[in-house]
Image (cartoon, rainbow, N blue to C red; front, side):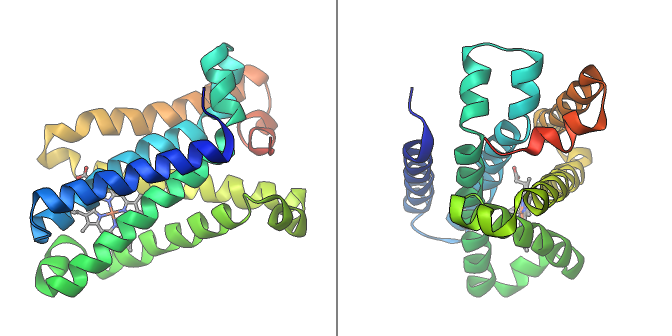
Length: 205
Ligand code: HEM
């Protein structure tokens, strides 16, 4: 099975190809841009959940698949950052093509809170490389990745949760968001200590 940076490269290529197809199918119009925003939000959620739950899944259900997930956590995490970079690019394209629609779909509060998520994503992706991680030190690395991961989880919970009352389509996404937190918390209680779900599960590997 494909692993490591090759996995990130392949997933990034697929994400770019998906976005390109969506834009081409809609003649590069606003609907195409909105499709890219929505599709990358969904790919981001799946990739984030895989990285976020990797250690917990490997502890709770050890098998070949969860071992692969655990070993490739870093590469799944960077792939999530690529997916969300495309989400941001499409948002900026929407803002420049149709400013009034952009403000109908979002507001300043969302931009500030989701913008902070982007700062965490950038910092976490940058420190996924050995040299940057060594520069930060293991203690600060764990802190950054612990706080950042839960902040991003909250961002998904808010983004999905606010859509749930209006469209049942978002129920499965909401279930995935909740399941991800549940898996982390169950692993924490199973291991009988805070370190399992928080500190130790964020240790690099
Ligand atoms: C400044 C930052 C951001 C802005 C301005 C923004 C804007 C938007 C907009 C306008 C949509 C709706 C697109 C449409 O209906 O056509 C959307 C969808 C979404 N965004 Fe973002 N977003 C930002 C960051 C984030 C972050 C950080 C997350 C999660 C970590 C996120 C998760 C989502 C989700 C889950 C959807 C729903 C996708 C769907 O319909 O399935 N966004 N975003």
